[in-house]
Length: 83
Image (tube, rainbow, N blue to C red; front, top):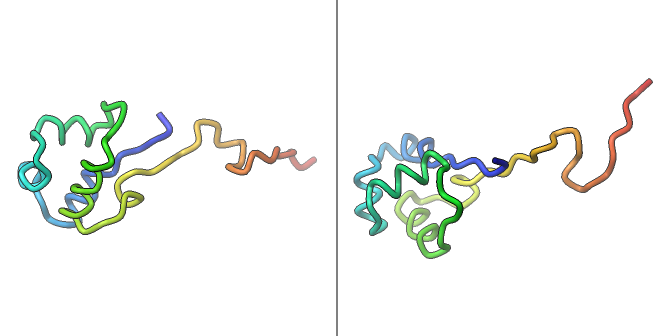
């Protein structure tokens, strides 16, 4: 999956437990766990906003995009191998 969730990293940086984040955000610990593992198909913007508020971070600190095909640059330009 090209979207990586770095929530566990942010929790460690902030020295916060999943339980505390769940209480601050207003969702269950199980949903935090699912989000940390990347087993969710989406996250609501209001939930993301509350997570960022609780962790004092930006959405980009939690979510990371990695292209599925690393041989193609993000702008869509083609790469020609050097000969």
